[in-house]
Length: 150
Image 1 (cartoon, rainbow, N blue to C red):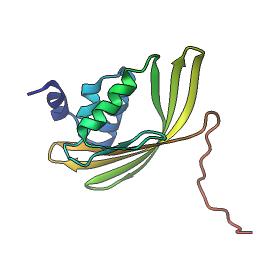
Image 2 (image 1 turned 180 degrees about the horizontal axis):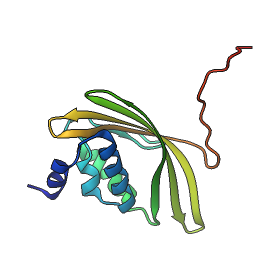
Image 3 (image 1 turned 30 degrees about the horizontal axis):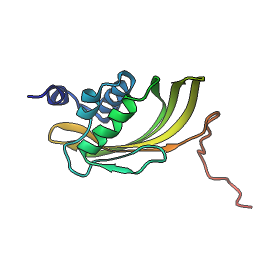
Image 4 (image 1 turned 90 degrees about the vertical axis):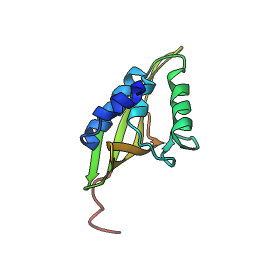
């Protein structure tokens, strides 16, 4: 059994565990651990900020390989997570802080990501990761609709 599948077999007790493993794999640039978080479905999808829709495990792997091969370190940290969990699926809205070391020094920004998990025969797995550009500085979140509409 390939190394990634051995890891995948022990992963997936909850969407939170898969999410933690996903972000740990991002931190360590470990493509095998990252891919073990994904479901075995043909239509899994990943969208990076400003990028196209990437469909399928092979294309997703190539996209993350390109990120991991980027010169300079990239650090991704989930800052805040909003969860909607049910019996067989979960949707997490994640505020990610991205720190990139460039030749000019460190640069940081925020990314707003949506991670979708399904409960599969192998446990919980990621089926969609959609990340949108946030802001470079202060992040705002709107929690309630205004009481007065005028």
